[in-house]
Length: 416
Ligand code: DI6
Ligand code: FE
Image (cartoon, rainbow, N blue to C red; front, top):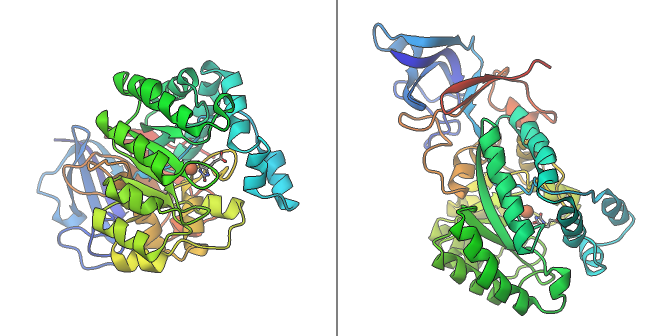
């Protein structure tokens, strides 16, 4: 007797080998597998296949008739900064008027403006807005979410941000992975002294983060106006000393060699990549590091140079898609919308965009137990009020979600 059985579903399993994935016994399907069934036992997928191949006498405590609707893995948003305070809308308006992101940052705005607001708010006042943003992403099908720190830049506020990220995972039916983004900007008290800031990060913050197990990985921002490859290298070495895997904001505004750097460290992911070089593509391919595409930031910054998607595809680099939800460069609270932008702006296929928001997003977080529908994996599922799987990325609004299943437990979407 299974805990849950979903029948008569259209399955996009996102398993390798065909664009939307497949199941044993199915012919390769252009629009997902019709007439599929999936069973859950003890929080995991126990069986998946065609309805007509269900074992004789199959029964479950709870049965769900999908009536032909689309069943996908729960979505994974592998890059967000959704714990923060303050607004940067005035900066956006200034950029529309011709100011650049770098000139605003050099004048003390940009990341540092969010740092001021986040420090002033204090950890307790970050929780409410963080919960609201996480729920907004959940309404778009997210069942696993990454949250970065990096708007505190001092010991107390960085720990506070990471604690809020952990709280989100305790309070909501959702997995939250927390990333310590220590090298985001040089904070005002270390202005002009990035080396001393880095010393403090390595001596004080990283050990405290590691000791309290508040982060699952570390990240940095490698750009001429942020941190140099040499600084990132020191920070990565220290993180690895604490057993923490690394990721990097790389090649967003310039080719600084960040992708090759994070690949040398066998990093989980290199994120943004608009200015990625052919050498960078080869380095990612060689290391198995995931390329995380963030078209919300590209759109909001009105970038014109796109990440080299054709070269990444040709080299077999897994491409994840994420929202990058942050107040400065990507105020985007819908992962399906990020999928749409990855198709319309970067040239992904709709199936690649869904793989990027499931299978490859999970890989960018080092999570091998989810992201595709296959026996033995965690039962994180989305049942959509949709037929064809391309409808997910085709929609510019949040597509209609009937039910989320998180670790085998049903969560019906609120009626809208
Ligand atoms: N992600 C980041 O961390 C930076 N850009 C991006 O897309 C800076 C975000 C910010 O300006 O707050
Ligand atoms: Fe980011």
